[in-house]
Each structure stands twice: as structure tokens, then as C-alpha cells.
Image (spheres, rainbow, N blue to C red):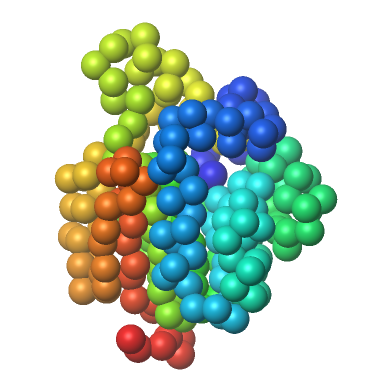
Length: 214
């Protein structure tokens, strides 16, 4: 959750983790937790994980902690950071476009790559460079912000400011696949549909020094 307008007023949905979780659960229904389970299943128990745009640390608290991973996360939203820290999550303030990404076995970015358009390729390069084993990218491909209704589209686009400005651009299935395969096709190990078709989950082979070959 980073961009050129750091610390701008957040959208209501990003004002508190409870609000964010409520909106996401309403949008995804039964697919909400499926998103997190699918990511967790790609991560080997006991490994080291760093999550970019980690929010309130829900992935770790609900799905990775039971797997005994060594976890750390980064985000720019102060409300989410405070909540995560109170919940015992190892998390720091991180601007993913300007701060170094800590090296880990697995680097994860979930539902946030669109926040970095048009610099998403540069971000993925940075994340790959920090991943020893895999970079895991989960991204929405069905979005209210691309609705045919101008009102719904406007409301959705004005609800996507985590603290660094509103983001209008989104991926669909074709544009996301093209963005990753054009530059990183030789590193894509798997690509599957999750959350009842609302998201796409990619695993890319890490590029960090000493990366594991799988």
C-alpha cells in the first residue's frame, strides 16, 4: 500500500481493520477465507515469510501462525499497524516502493499489486529479489471499480486509499496475466483461480541470492 502521496487521508474502509474485514467479507462471501487458505497452502511450515501490504496481519494470525512460520510484515496504514502490533504481529511501517524489502523464504503480496500501477513491474522485481524460495502474488481480477455503473465505479475507486492516495486502475484476468508473464514468465511456477474466481494466485520462483530451486 504505497505510492506517491504518502500519509494522505485514508478511505473509510481503511480507517479500521474491522471495517475493512467487514467490507471484504461482504464482497467475497465464502471466498473470503479461501483466499488466505490458498496462500497458506503454498508456504512450507517453519519457513520464513515476509508479507508486503500486510494490513492487520490476518494471514499470519489466522493461517500462518499455526504452521510455525517465522513471520514479519510491512504496511503504511497506521491504524492497521497499531492493531496488528496489539495482536502480537511482528510488523513495521514499510513503503514498498522506496524501502528495502527484507529477504525471506517466501514473500507475499495479497490484493495490493494494483496499488502500484504503473510501477507494478518494478515492484515485482524488487519482491522477487527478496524471495529465496517463492514470491506469492494474489490479486483481484473481478472489481467493482470496473463496474458498468458510473456511480458504483466512482464509489469503488474512491474507497481504495490506504494512506497514499486513491487508485483508479485495476487488473482483470488478462491484464494481470500479461503483466506477470511478459516479464516474469520463466519464473511462474503455478497460477490458479481462487476466491470463487474473484482472484488469481501466482507462485513465482524467488531470485534472492541462495534461492531454493524447486
